[in-house]
Image 1 (spheres, helix red, strand yellow):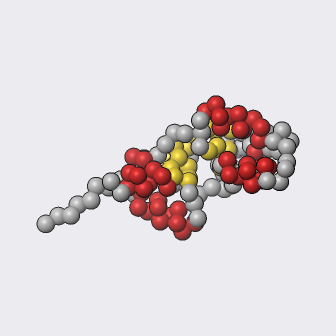
Image 2: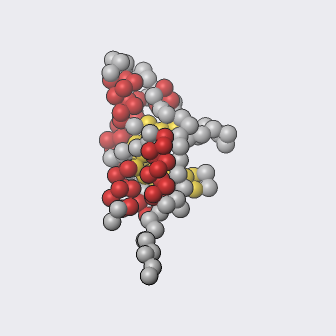
Image 3: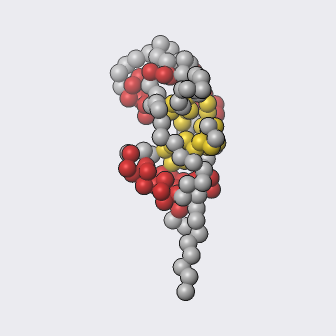
Length: 132
């Protein structure tokens, strides 16, 4: 008797609701991109081959700009981003992705394949697809 489970991979559940931005961009311009692109997060581009990707969530802007009464025109994205970010590969089983998120206190991560961002994944997608 086989109890074969349907394997769900990160690639099966990842989303494309992100935008790539430059770290020198102002937070004001980043907010415009959030709205225009309907992005759930921003990925900060690498400056060179030895750099790492950064990540900006609206909650980062709320904590580091809004709550501290700083001007979004005068704050750059690199000042509020998380960097380096923990990323996942598209072939990862969503169960391991969920464990990784739990182990490191993450709620979202970029999906990177061969050094390029190919999507983003969050707990929402993992749970909705992984438990069906």
